Length: 381
Length: 226
Ligand SMILES: Nc1ncnc2c1ncn2[C@@H]1O[C@H](COP(=O)(O)OP(=O)(O)OP(=O)(O)O)[C@@H](O)[C@H]1O
Ligand SMILES: [Mg+2]
Image (cartoon, rainbow over all chains, first blue to last red; front, side, top):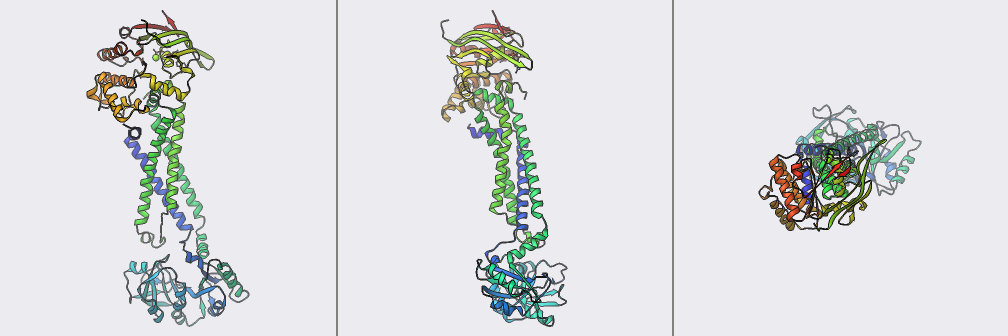
């Protein structure tokens, strides 16, 4: 026998309790990791370097107000802009769907190419998209989800726009933050709408992150005191403004997480106290045999820490496996694209579990170190 | 007997303070115990037998007076020095055996050796020898619950012996045993003092048990009576 096997035998003496405490740590850790991941997903939009280089310019009044198409000529002259394309949200319903979870945008294909920095064409060619005025450029996730292929037709019923689209798939992209979107020719939309001379927003790319702010203020200035004043912001800031609409989700999830941790703390502390309380007499015997306080503290800590560690391993590992291997996009009907359990979240969960293991060992250890051998021997089993 | 004194007790008192009232458990006791003696402590309940035994064994401290074991004033040791001292010098045998229920007989006996520097192989040899001495070599892989009371107490004696201590202290070791098992246990303790020159101090209520000892002292209300 070694000290290690002695600790193990002690920890497993009440197998049901050990199993239940491991389970409660596991379930709580899984819940905690899930909550932290959800919080992150909801509050931090998918980040990419490219997103900080892209700027969206919209009508200052509101996002739903269009902008004059002739602004393009002015934008083209603003230094620091590498590429700019009209970018109009169509928001139609695919086939017979009443709610379509992927967006469609009207763009200028030739100009839009300059905005595509991440991702690559996996099927078809971008050229054929540029050449065919009724074609579209589709994300691989959408292709996969509906079992589509190059040359297939996609029909969209307009919701904002009183027109329908009949598009032919010309190319497929993959590797962007969101591989679901459908892009089509702005000219087609203009035609169907009878050339209103407007666009939804301008989508542009700046030369570098350092000049982004300068470019943004130049754009805003350029249209000051015109009929259509513009508000430009980075793609990231634009996404953040959506997230603000979700309200104080962060606070809410934060408080739920704290409750989970606190409950878990109560459970582990009381379980450990009970486990040690039951063994008071034995611990007094160990003291009589010559084990020091710090030896006993070590035993209790190892046991408590060990149970917490196993629980955390199962819980965090389980949550990771579940969120990494499941098709969340399908599960949430496209609400969540990614549900990434990051290393940081895993580390947070693991540290909390470790801390719990240590804290739950402290109270019983204090009780044990205060107990005199004579006192401990008098306690009944 | 010309043996040197292992334990010398001088003017030893233990007073428990309970609120306003002082309970004198031991009142200025002086006593010498020689090496190899099998001393039995008798007396009515509450007379201070256990208290005296605990102080000698270094698990309790006197209020005043002195208790030296092999010249060491045990009360002056710090908590951790005392722990080491107990491991090396004292073997405990309790009325209720107090074996660790999740450990086998062998592992229970091995437990105090985990605090020593002995290597695994030496440890196992020593445990085997000790278990043989108490006649339980064939039961070493049994858990306490698979042993009879008498066997459990013999395992406990083996645990007390395995570190080769100077002193063996036993508080009513036969209190929970039938007369046959009690005889076995007492026989072992007697043999230890006679053949292995161990100093055994045993508290008992039973005059028949006390008869196994080489000397009996009586306590009454915390004082020695002749
Ligand atoms: N922790 C304590 N606090 C107060 N008084 C105590 C405490 N421990 C023991 N006593 C008192 O000290 C006296 C001696 O107790 P002790 O346990 O030594 O008696 P004992 O001779 O071993 O009795 P028994 O035969 O019943 O075991 C008793 O009067 C007891 O009430
Ligand atoms: Mg007693």
